[in-house]
Image (tube, rainbow over all chains, first blue to last red):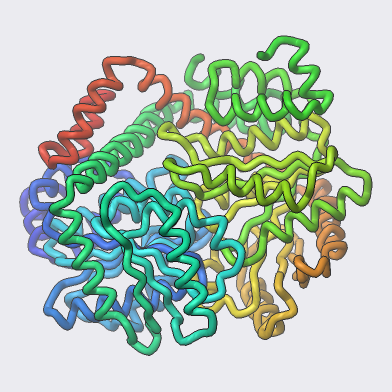
Length: 312
Length: 312
């Protein structure tokens, strides 16, 4: 797979090869490391946008419309959607299909849903690697979308150049609960479905939260109002993203952010590799199956089981 | 800490000792394993309820009111809330404070928010362990609440005896996106804020999804309508939870579920312990700091950095 020809085909943006490379990465294939190593020198050119927000905020439509803005600028756009599907079903595939109908088969768009992490973890790692593949393959803009506000999802969007948090009017009490987390990761806020009641109140709430938060750079996250389904406000959003990106590249805080992304990526990969190594041993894998039954039957506790598997 | 006296104080339900035990677990303290090992024989009595749903669904109010139903039955209730706070701020603490005002200082309630996972991971493990501590401490019902629908959050609620998914009328398109995941984990559905428009449509949507999903037991998840803020429908919810729990204990699928929970818990703990062990070495920790800078500066790729830290 990772012979020179294929690397060149990925770098040349050949869709079939790009897709296959991402599958390898998702599966944690043996040669994924070599592949990423070879692609690495060609990364760093794309603008990577992370978009998050709760279900119901209309993120998918927003991402699709934002992609259209970039397409109109003759840019190639990659979209990586992280779907909170269960290990048992193909939620991600369904998402892809709906998407493809909307953006059509535009050759300048590449859409990929990342399914749930497997038993060994690695969804975050695989997602960030998939973004790097698209970057190397010459996509000018890569949009990473996560549904939900879980820890992994937050980490994934934090690893972008620009992080966009989408809210909708009238989210209610729970905006309070998520505020601490989102205030610190958001470079740009979007109030989507801004034709609904309560826009002003939501805007005031966001402003109030911002005044309380301690961002450690001088950036004041703009609040952009959109109605994605009616294609309103998307140009403003693209402009706000470009402004933050220009700011970030110059800012000394950009360095701190890049360091923290690097640390997270190293640790995530290390976590996955360490587990993979232990589980490679057939005896350990078989003993795990037995211990699963013992723990389920409450014969031993989890800590004792892990001690036995990897020594204490 | 884990001398006999303290274990007995935890088992006796002394709040201060319970709280301290959970802190130890959250920090991944050296003696956490011993503590859990000692508490283990005393677990398995509580009814563990996992509640999830997107921000804005009114989960906190629902959990508080449901707790009141159990309190009225003279039961002791533990609440463990997983907050998607950032590593930089104290989102979890804020949540606790708001809560305490609502449920007051009822001696039969124990409320704890679990903050974000640290650099070494372990939030899921810590949360499930905290539930076990409350179980051992004699709380009859333990409610685990997660904000958001991230992977970790889903795993945490799946580890409960009964999993409740909360939706609200008019969630829009994204209910489609999350359907694959939630259909398979949900034992009981709640349509909260059921005084709003669109309840019937949401109910029909849930029913349509259920007819398409492949649950591997014979349970047909009920849909309960609540208006938590007006204390409506909570008794129905408690009854539905009790029904599923009775079903689950007898069902042969209960065994499969317990096995899958056990496997997940073992793997999560293994993942954390393996990383902890590597990072304990000062030389590795120092080299990590250097490699972080190199990866951030794009001098080397992440895979090469990890290879150097843990060997390939």
